[in-house]
Amino acid sequence: MKKIGFLSFGHWNPSPQSATRSAADVLLQSIDLAVAAEELGADGAYFRVHHYARQLASPFPLLAAVGAKTKHIEIGTGVIDMRYENPLYMAEDAGAADIISGGRLQLGISRGSPEQVIDGFRHFGYQPAEGESAADMGRRHAEVFFDVLRGEGFAQPNPRPMFPNPPGLLRLEPYSEGLRDRIWWGSGSNSTAVWAAKLGMNLQSSTLKDNETGEPFHVQQAKQIRIFREAFKEAGHSRTPRVSVSRSIFALMNDTDRAYFAGSGESRDSIGFLDAQTQAIFGRSYAAEPEALIEQLKADEGIAEADTLLLTVPNQLGVDYNAHVIESILKHVAPAMGWR
Image 1 (cartoon, rainbow, N blue to C red):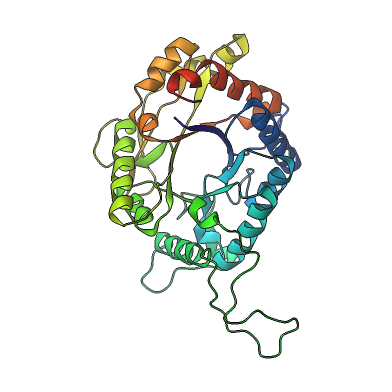
Image 2: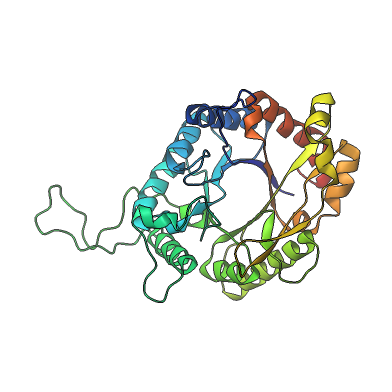
């Protein structure tokens, strides 16, 4: 395991039991947690994107703010739903955030997942073309976004511009060198992992994927990663792709940890339906004393295949507690997993 970061869904709720009772709370605490994680030596701060929910939504103001407040930690998403995105405007936002962070952006994008409302992307002004599904539209947006990140000119300049233009066709600005190699596709199936590999994206695989073989989740995920890497190689790309997996992992260090999470360590994979056609398998959570946790994680084939592990954090428990959760893994579990 080369890198370990955290993944926050950014939940907020006006409940007295929540440390994030407003959107302001969760946004500002997300910045503070990224700063704390960097100080602890974590490698990445990643944030989920959900629309129409009391969770983090528009990612780029947050990513830019985290980039301005930190110096070394990778900053990313897991994932941005491309059904909702104008890919050209997104390329400008991403370029600006990457420049502010000094080239540390790691953008996870995807065709999207089940959401809070029916076809919410239509309210954003997007709808599938004739004969196209919403998933197809998300992948089409992703292809346009990924292509314009090449930084090549494509737009015909005005012969009488307000400001002087460089020669030739114009590209989007600001352009951030190297960002295209730091785009990740959040894949829920083997086929979309292959699609992403052919394009040249990295791979994000979460705790949810299509139940394609009936095997345990971590076994299916490991196979997905191997299929992705082989397809990436066959496509002739020159670089080595990165692969991340996410997990809910808690080292039980004190009575508070045990009160919150001791029961979740006994969880198992579960099966459910994302829609009428798609059966999915959901991976288990881990919670145990460090020694037991190490042995459990070493048996997880998905973690073994990946180079990056994202720890999903209970953000509503506040910055201090989540920093403790991250520190417990980094100090007492990660070294035995080959980290650092």
